[in-house]
Structures are given as C-alpha cells and as structure tokens.
Image 1 (cartoon, one colour):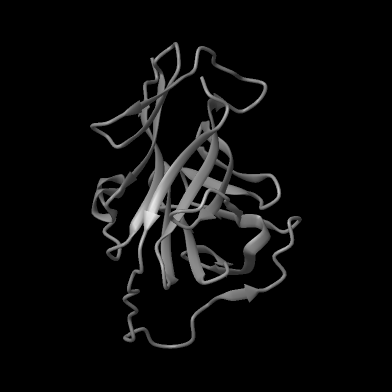
Image 2 (tube, rainbow, N blue to C red):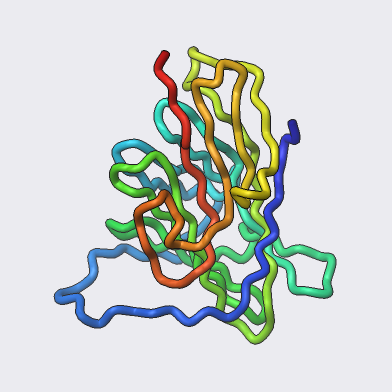
Length: 210
C-alpha cells in the first residue's frame, strides 16, 4: 500500500454564487496568522477533520481514522515545479459551517473550504479558484483506516476504483470501508447539494458491527 497518494485536480476559473438574503452579520473569525503551528478543527457528531498546516490534517469517521497528512500543492499546466500550499497559505476563516483556508499564489487565489456534515461520517473539501490560468491542485494524503490507539485492525488495502472515481480503503476483517474521491457536489454523501464546484471528499461507507 502506498504511503502517500496524489489526486491531481485540474481546476479552472469558477464563479462563486453568493447569497445576499442572509440577514444579520455573519458569525466568522478571520486571521492572517496562518503559521504552521496554528491548529484548526472542523467536526460533526460522527466525524472530524483537524490538525496543523505543518504536518497536514487528519480525518476521522468514528470510530476509525480515515487518513492523515492531508495537504495540497499547486502547479500551473506546462510546468513541473509545484508550489507547496503551506508556503502560500495567507488566511484562515473560521465559521459555524466550517473552515476556509485561502492560498495566494503568483497569479491565482484558491479558497479551500473544509466542511463536516453534522450527522454524516465524512468530510467535504471544496476548492474555488480565481486566476488568469488553469491551476492543478495536487492533494497529498496518507491512508490509515484504523481504530484509535490502543485498538487496531490490520491488513489495510488501498486501491483506485474507477466506477466510484476514488480510492477505496478496506481492511482484513471487512468491518470498515472508506472512500476518498472526487465528485460532483450533488453526489457528496448522497444528501447535501452544494454550489456547482469541484470537490474532494472522503467518508466511511461501511461499518459492520458483527
């Protein structure tokens, strides 16, 4: 099983649809203090994604950890050098709906919104790109699919599933299964319909108790 996986996302200029019907001030907290030691967390009742930019984020769909070391880098088409997302992270915005991290590159801005549904065992990461050229977003992560220490399961497997357009994580006991994939927002977790954007998502899709 590979220790690190990359999902290239070829993203073009997206138009953000903003609602103006919301009354009252938004409950948000924004900071440009985005140093590697800043901790962030997004959670629901059945899942959570949290960590530091320096080490990458980890994600749980209780009772299992799905992945760790989640981070991004950026590359313009036709170039081989990638820009480490940590080096261009400029702002972090906290709100009740999730956390948005803003990356500012040479001629592009990427907004990465991390959202965890309240009652679903998964995480949705949405990317919006503004710039004059297309930008490849490379997502790095290490698959885990294991229980919290000291409990553990073994025999993890990690493979690409073309039909699901994602990486399927499984383990030897077949009690737990998860998927990390790209998909249209209306397919995310089978329920939540978001704005027309490209997303990277992961969720626990199998949990057999016996």
